[in-house]
Length: 261
Image (cartoon, rainbow, N blue to C red; front, side, top):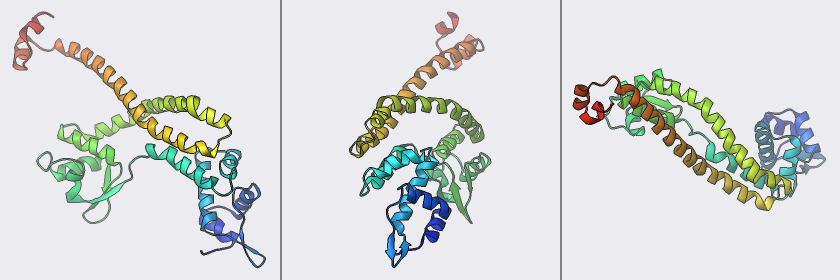
């Protein structure tokens, strides 16, 4: 295994040597190897720094990180990394993907008959969902949003309108996400902390986080369906004033429904 001095370790980790020394002093890095009197570091040390930096970016204090990585010098770093990544993995957005331009409709679940590739590309480009990635190549920046936008094109809805709606939705779903995270914190995480963050419980915590996603999705979908029904009922009541009995019969609405208003 290749080794290198502390200066190279700091450079590879994108940190200052002073910060690395601070982490060493606090026990956040395993002991360095030795080549004569010189301390030498390896990829394992770099992995540990990546872990520490990742935890810090997510808001963990150095004190909390010490607890996570210093309980068991043989394996807690791996456990902490697995727990950290496991808690985030179910919620990570889809990564951007590159495709041939001709593959775009099929990649987004549309048949060529549904919408022309040129029209679809124009709409998605205007909405900022795709970008050029070289001659004849496209980068789909948010595949899930691109699929929804492609379906919107098929329905005659401009993708830009859908993307704008998505931005508004983010404000509301952010509040919903906070509710579920708070539920997890109160019911699961706080007890884990009170128990001293035992390494043996890490798989259970990770499994709970993984299972929280479908639970949250189903609860949110159930609520949305209920509210959507209420809003659609109100919408139908509003538009019914614009529908004459003649127009209603042409739309397949029973005459008695219109005459009883």
